[in-house]
Length: 486
Image (cartoon, rainbow, N blue to C red):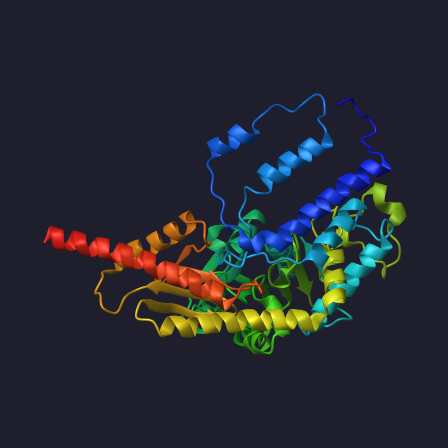
């Protein structure tokens, strides 16, 4: 293909190419449920497919697209598949996908008001929708859309450190539980805290932060002339869906004048559900909240969000005034979101959230979340009726943990760990479902995250039946080995 230094296509070429891409996306949405959710490959196999030098001359655009569709898009897990139960699935929705296409196609810079006032306004409007849902003040409150929960948590902790400690945080101490998401520890290290400044508070038998142990840790640090400055509560632990006692933590933070950050990246969207709202009681007392629309608000990646009680906390923390931006500062009501977070250059994330909420309405999202909570509960009830399974952590906000543990057998903990790990490995190898393990109470358990509103109970039953068959097969092998050994 001859060189094209303007990097342009004709109108007809653009339309033909674009229609083909849209057709590919529509076909994916229509057929994904009938495909395998799992794709496995080695680095050597991927190198054999893709490893090459950057070409000096271009190829036919149709050939490049066909290659990508056939080899890249089909060689990945389908995170929106009904039988992908692991990690946090990404169900997404078509309206938001198209909104992302628009935002990218128009290449909108969503950092400053002067460049895209409509984009900034939509971010203000949608942030206010979320502030209202979480009962944070809409007049003083604020927030920012980020790439995900990791960046939202990082932004929150930088803000908390600046507001509470200023330049000197050498004596500052931060508190989190043993179930707090790893992104928080990464953020803590990133902003310069030493491990001696971090207190990991044990959780109780329900995997919730122990209030008594939190109080003891704070009191001890005060006696040692340290500066407790932040507690991170979890609203929807990734392992279990568990929510910390937010109301009690908020009370402690208020009395101790400590910043209260709630990591609700997973569970925050459950505020739309009557059941979820009850579980999340106390979240409205937080100074800052992380919530991920690309999880339970069904948005495509990347979309996280940080909400704060006072928008000035963000601008006071992140505003810089370089000379090249002095002509576009505007007035104080015209928010420049590059002054509210770490990124200067920002994509227009608010559009997909705005268009999907406007198109489907909050009621549709409420019903989808209710469905997920009820599906996990129904799954728990089914498992409890079986002689094969033991519930380790009950259904909470769409997550349930269980393990193969037949009543008829007296297996050691080590053998039970082996069986459950093998069940996960074999179910993944079959490519029928994605179901991985986690560790709770020093046990290897199977974890199901059921937030996909298109996952049916029949899908879950089929997967559990397959797991039972695998477990029985492994159990027989272990019994045969025991008999032979004896």
